[in-house]
Length: 288
Image 1 (cartoon, helix red, strand yellow):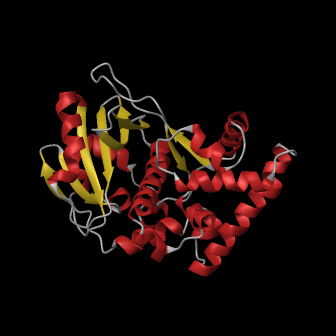
Image 2: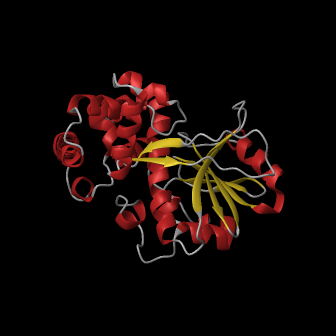
């Protein structure tokens, strides 16, 4: 099971998945998705976690303590039950390195050097944390219509709330660090979409897209039999057409196979950016 989603906490859990609504209705599915949330609210929500024990009803200080306790238990008990010979300190360093690079495409070397282990051990650590549903790979999307796409996965913590105790940061620190802010929001949105796909009737799969020269990049791509949904996640309340440039490129490449592009932002309302591309509050994922 994935973490508690925004729809379960603030929306209608019995409503159709946002993925199905976007496929069936297009931009109309987001037409009334107005929001009173701002950037700080989204960061607090992301760092507040999707673990039910942390997210539901605990004040922020207690939530942070619970998450720190969970990580301690993860390294000293859960992992040891599966692999008694694993070193908790190195496991912790590995997970800290992973957290610093969440929502990124990076080489294995980044992780095994930070954890002071060899490549083979780092691969084993990552597989162990994948089995425990702490980390997740989002595969690179590929199609014969597009050439020169990278094949490397995008790696995520499954819960953005773990970034706080792993990197010793809170809302204020995240808001001051543009790179970390982007990673927190991307990780949070990916968690929402990952869970929505599990209950969607449209049978979609989650990917990312990046060209080898890194000139074009789409944060998240959902492929369904009915067409492609593209998502960009932006830490701005007023996205512009420039923020949609990679989605416009993808639409031009795919033609009718492109169903809709969505620039998710931290502002109050949805609006059209271009034909087939809209901007919408992140909260539209559960309140549209």
